[in-house]
Length: 249
Length: 194
Image (cartoon, rainbow over all chains, first blue to last red; front, side):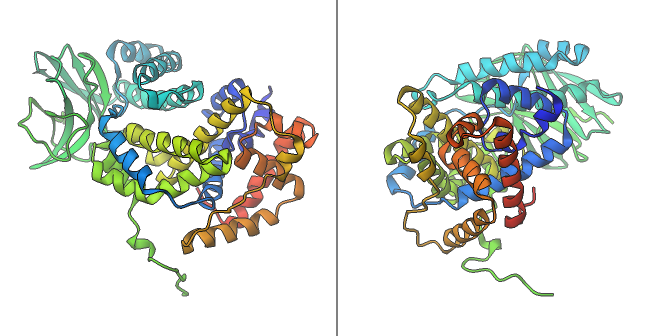
């Protein structure tokens, strides 16, 4: 399919009217086409109105089922990826897309165990891949940025390295061989602003080595902390930090 | 300057979905309950429009709402509003389901497909939904017949654009263009910005 043909598929794409291969081809095109991206965003907002016009009343039992259902469903981490992949990704640049796809398909498989997710399909994996790729590019971007500065410390039996890019106002926390958190707990990352702690997302409890793009801007934070929190994370730290690193100036 | 007139609750009284989703991403179940209350009717509505079957649309709605909980940490505000993120997920799941169901069974006849237009047949006492329906109906009428049929078959019936072309006996390229042009008209009529 030519580029012009692909341009014209914005409508079909926003309506979920493309099949697997066409959808994948369009998504590759979309990643590099700003005008298409804008048009898809507008069309998606338009189809959202078609959905709102279909709003119906729900039975109270659905609410009960859903609210009970979520208590047993683990949330995905904000996008932690294995460390060795990031190192390779930074070096190879364009290789990112391939491993992001592999990583997200693996993640989809790992989470796909329960009956609730029997409808997980290739399209979801593709969407997740696109998201994981953007995320990985942000992550790699921080690590590779010319003004990246780092600071390391011993953390939970392993090493933690904080990498901050002032120009991007973003930070990455790289963990190496950290001990697994206690059962039912996760490591949560925080930006410290004076006495205040601002959540910067969760680490993947299943990996001892990983690189995590910290959520939110550094925004003048003086340090970064790691705490052990109940699964799902906390709004404010509920335990003393296992590590505190100053943001490198 | 004229102030816009709002019927019912003022918009500022509505929960801020984006903020709520941020709290959901940190594992806040109360925030999730508020998200549920704000979106469940629309999630079920779109599933029912596409699937027509009450039991199946409830199953899909339940899947979608739990998926919102599960993947909230991956929601990116810079990629679109929270409501559109949720409704896009709901539509995709409903379409996936209708395609998997219909792959096993025979496709409906062309006549039955063409009959299928948004029904909005559920009684709703919600003023906001009625206003939304009025506006969407009015704007759908501004489309050409082929644009309107193409868009509604794809969106409310879950057809791929190849299937739309088959149902309407039109060349693929024509349907592709009709879908895009139809959405452009709808977008402009509804005053959508992204």
